[in-house]
Image (cartoon, rainbow, N blue to C red):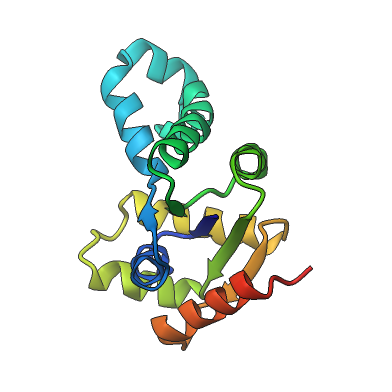
Length: 178
């Protein structure tokens, strides 16, 4: 099983993913940000400047491919359920990765966590992010992208405890909405 937890920075993805890790036997975290970090460290500046003009590693051509490939090899080698916290707002990138994960394991789920801009801003500040950092820059872009639909099942984290969000996800894994 692969469980994608998507949403803006500060919406609660990592916290939810860690709680799911504690509740789902034989599971592990798989973070596509690590794949992006590897590519950012590996590729020369000329390639990064050509492919990722925005500075976003997700725009590197290999990022989507490597994310799916490394998830596939990880799932095969270690026979674990993958819990994947990620912020992915571009529909074509989302579909590439979701479809790739579905080929790895047909039992792939995607949940898009949402919250108001005010809540996200407060959470980012509380975790020590500097106002105006990359995370803050992405907030409006994420809220706009996710409001258009098409990112799986949406779950609001607004005024919900993490345990409530995790319980909603666990119930959907047992009885998915068709």
